[in-house]
Image: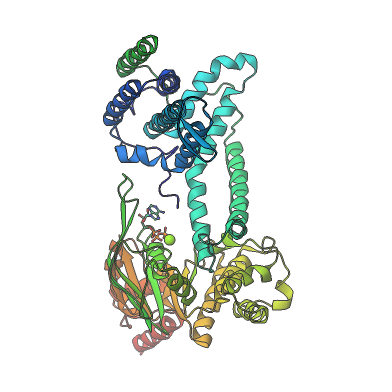
Length: 265
Length: 286
Ligand SMILES: Nc1ncnc2c1ncn2[C@@H]1O[C@H](COP(=O)(O)OP(=O)(O)OP(=O)(O)O)[C@@H](O)[C@H]1O
Ligand SMILES: [Mg+2]
């Protein structure tokens, strides 16, 4: 059931992209998302696809893996596509009963679907090439300036680290409990929505209990090792900007400049 | 009537860097009425193998057959197979979810769509089979009883499905010696009185030695050897090679023999050892 979930999953190989500074990668991903919303032509998107393809190739993550990340949100993409298709006013090119499809709607829907697809692919590339721990280190470091305004940067990052760390554990646990209940004849796959929801009880109760138990144990273990938040904490891994980071930043700047130029033209 | 596997292979996470070949060309047969032990050190594929035996996972390659039915994707057949082959997981207490013990044990039979009367009967029977006083335990919350009791409730939950085969994955992991003995005693009794076919998974020879008729030794996803406990213990060096020990008493006998004691080699219990050693001592004193 969860074997196909790749969002938030790390693909551990050694590549120039994996070795980039996490802060740089996060910033680039953000700008990449902005760039997607600046583009309003198919040639523009073609350019992004080319850029993304090259990046994925360098990252040594199989394209198959990046595309698999789309599967869970296929539904959302579809809904967005349909809403955009039906709700955009403009020149009508097709009618069926009360359904009217406009040229603008078709265009808008197509763009939105492409945007979302590329957005997910881009962001999954970030998580695929950055281990969760390093990623949150990066986030913490980026949030530091906001500490002055009372933002608990370290605590937020720690919470994220823990949450990310426990996703696979909880999925494993879910699978185990599901199997245990299946061997007692439970059926999670058939029936209507109501009976399916009811069938989840034997899964959710043990899962919650074990999640709470784990949280409790973790808090205990952290306290036993004198954890007390971010004050005066030093790190084992120091983040350093290397030559590769400058190269990546330069290449990305060129990419973004190209997008801007496209936009102005 | 038997469970049979034919050249099964099982691969986890195919197509990713985490690919693991968990089972490699495994052939086992478990006949009705047998008491079989599966041992192997951690990661040798024991849990994977037993999940294939009741269709929770499907073999990547090869065939699994339960009482002549090939385990496949057919849902109806799967349901029947899971009822025939009862599987008790490692740490089964984590599957408990109902308000009372009786309701939790009833979960399995309810899924079989039995009459309420039959369900009640089975719940009572199953709880008594694992050594509970039904009246006392039935209304307890499964979250407020001891670890060993939870474990027995979980086992009862599987027994209530009336399987022909009972497979237990490390049923005593994490229990104290008293809890361990209790569980083993119950399992032994189940096998002897109700003629269950029992498969017991463990990584400790010590536990299995006294109980089972036949041992299957797994190592790195392959069957390393199989035979009666006595046959297996005679190959102590072989076992040590795959990081498995032999029971303490067997290694004492081995050491004594090395030092010139003329005693039998295939001793499994302390009682046997005592008799043999005393015999030898008397012989020497003469
Ligand atoms: N869900 C899974 N995903 C990926 N690999 C797995 C999974 N479960 C088990 N494995 C791998 O398969 C191999 C066999 O695991 P298995 O759980 O069958 O061993 P085991 O003999 O039961 O060990 P233990 O004594 O620790 O319970 C191991 O190398 C393990 O890492
Ligand atoms: Mg196991």
